[in-house]
Image (cartoon, rainbow, N blue to C red; front, side, top):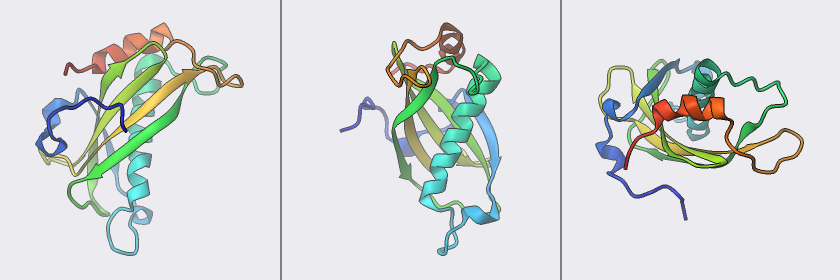
Length: 152
């Protein structure tokens, strides 16, 4: 059972539903033997887009001893095929910003497309490296993520 709240269908999502985008080119190696991007690669796009935002807008330094977000849940729904050499616009928003966790929602759009080829979610729980026990989301991170929070 997912902790993602009920919302409109992912098929009804549009670019306007996401406040932040990162453009990601597909690579030749992303394709599988069926000629489209392999399902596991979508999770790499999720991870790249979320962490690009965290590094660029919250001051995340993954090499420090500061708390970091550890992935505890992720999921993806596929709506239409993507393949090399497609260029993707990966949208990110925050559905829930809790005390120690963040639930991101991600939309993967082909460049210029209004509806997503895939939608998914990604949950970080913040921990201090080496301890692996939940801690509060750092205030600097919380302030940056506040710009991505969307209402139900």
